Image 1: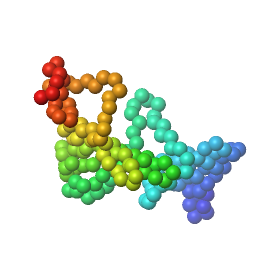
Image 2: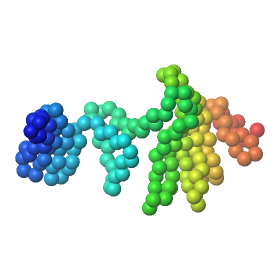
Image 3: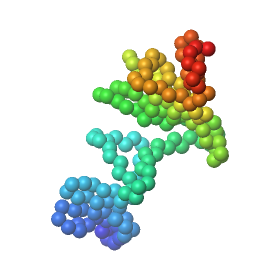
Length: 171
């Protein structure tokens, strides 16, 4: 502890353990096999992890989420949130979410989801799921197995539509 504040400092509770506390509450444990942060962590700049990242949720059967926030000002509709997948520092693919309207009210929260790939330094959208459920696949596509569409849904193919309600063929 610090002489000016006895409830803040570091202490050794046992063999191969070093704990840090603030205001009498333990905030971090350094143990022989792990470092554990006891509270939320806020990073003001870039966080770089040199190894793998594992996210463990609560063992209550609930959903574990990885939440990535873009804190653009209210009224903005052009911000995007992305997960980039890299190999040897080069972008290989990207999962992208972009707003399609002003999120300043709870009822107006719509976003598209895109899967993108990069070839020869050029990134292109390959799959787009729009906020209304419309799904578009770009590029050459082959289906390995069965492609099933709901009744009344249409599949746009080169040269026309294939209707999924039993009237197979081009329209």
